[in-house]
Image 1 (tube, one colour):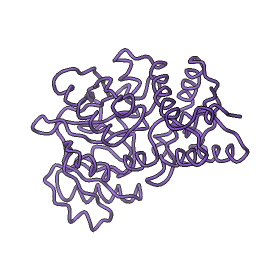
Image 2: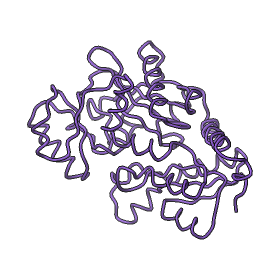
Image 3: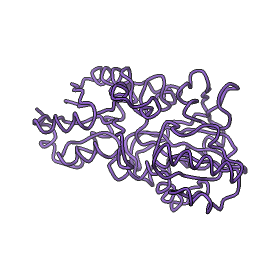
Image 4: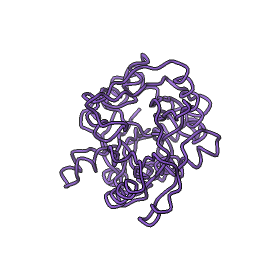
Length: 336
């Protein structure tokens, strides 16, 4: 079986003049090397495609694949993660991970929390700030937490993201609106333990593989799993396997959110406990990083005894099962 690989390579965008933080969600060459090597070890023929522009060129000249392993994040807009899946669907090519609707919904943290709340899942009270004038209308008790509405990898999050007064809210809101040119999510700050839960599979077959607790070291930025803390996680963060009662609650909540949102194949759900010790949904990452040693999902899976090869194989198996169920086999066995 021939598997194409779509991705956004960080070095490509740095060469075009984008900053380190602007490209933080994109992949390093070693991630693509590890992914391709693992797919080959699993017995698949591979074909590096690259970003959406390279994909469009390849499709236009007639190239096809039995399956595309898609980890492309996209550069612009709240639908950026959905762009590659949309194009692949137009050409009737199956792919890994969630569909365009789920990727767009979950990237917009405010809309995602609306749906999660409708499912009865605890999540902090919040509001979406679209303009500087909206900051004066925020009516939530302090402390608060603010972050861009549609970014990942801790982009825009630093110690000023924890907000204790209207003055700090105004300063943080102005900074985020100007820097990211998108709305800002303002929510109640959660003071408790922080976890990320790994999920594999889809629908009723989805399962939580475990919970990992995040511990910030003394030299890390305080209280926030920030861009800097994530970027230099090897020096600033300790990750521990968690299996106590709160961790089990996190797994149950994460699985409920994953299924309710319709996420597919694999990813992570981030949670943090409130002042009463109740785990709350913060956000879901249906397109999680796959660097073998640096990304949270592979780190978590390793702690659960799931090798990188097993992780990638399980994701492919889940996507391929969905492809086989959706269409007659003869239509997906043909690839140039």
